[in-house]
Amino acid sequence: MKYMATYDLMESIRNTNEWMGATARAMASYPAFSMTMNPMLQVMAAWGEVTERSFSRMVVKPDWGIRSIPGPEAQDHLVDVVPVVERAFGNLIQFKVRRRAPMARKVLLVAPMSGHYATLLRSTVASLLPDADVFITDWHNARDIPVSEGKFDIEDYTLYLVDFMRALGPDTHVIAVCQPAPLTLAATAYLAGEDPDAQPRSLTLIGGPIDPDAAATDVTDFGRRITMGQLEQIAIQRVGFKYKGVGRLVYPGLLQLQSFMSMNAERHSKAFSDQIMRVAQGEASDHDAHNRFYDEYLAVMDMTSEFYLSTVERIFKNREIAKNEFVVAGKKVDIGAITKVAVMTVEGENDDISAPGQCVAALGMLTGLPDSKKAEHLEPGAGHYGIFAGKSWRLNIRPLVLSFIDANSGAAKVAKLASVKAGA
Image (tube, rainbow, N blue to C red; front, top):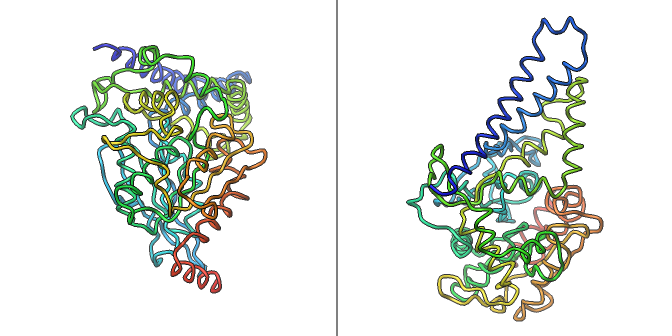
């Protein structure tokens, strides 16, 4: 089939590099070679170890790795990952803390579907768990979804979010990170028009392209330069016979990873060369900073072709959300219909993916929402990753988001939160 050979070729190249790394590591570590005292053998073994690990991680979904959290009574509480709503293209899951009563704060994290798994938000989840009941959208790898399950585009994505919000109820506080910010805003507006009682209490949009034209980046420039026909020709392939989704048209995760790496090629190259030398000198470890970051960063997933192409065309090129012209299932979604949900935007000053101005544009679109329910924050010196998982999130943004949630909880919730804080 057309494009299937290309998909299998990319997997063959990945597999070959993994094999070459394993071979180099095994050969250079052979005991007899240790008598030669040649330092290049150590470097070769180190190169093989880093290469094998890097290429093997590209096709494996990372584990959440959140085993337990400390409780106020000086005891650890085990954490279970429990599905709440299960669907073909993604589940709603909860991080259920054993032996803990329901928390006053209920948070829904909307994870990006932009090439990485939802586990990219692992540190975000871990930081919120002590203070809230946390749920997250766990999107599935398109290569593992049979063609018989049908299509999945941005309208389907939006309706998934609508169903997830309904399942959690109106006391939910939603946090959307990066790519899903405009669609989460649209899902909230859809509920405002179709099912007002199911709207969440608050909505926090972090580094998302609500209006891509508000500030130019390499991402928006690429979207303007390329035509949809060109994009389909160079980016879309069919899943090979190795996976359950054989024949499904997808935007491959390996292709997206290539784009990610090329954006900061010099920095990534230095990171890997430094790691090889650390391994050769015996200074690296299984869970050091390099491996913790790249085990997650290199793990990529395929997106359905219709989701990827409709995102580029309708969000970036046509700016349907920014122009308030988005249509879901034949119904016009009016952002101005949001009148009760408090909305906060968070941007990073040095964000080179969703530049300052793109996300805060949402506040101007909320014509039916009073200013008292709007908030914005620009984090000085922060890049894209830092505003939801890095130092800026831990030290500054997380406290702001929790305070925003508390300020926009119901009266009963506020009283409960006050009593919890007093008891602490």
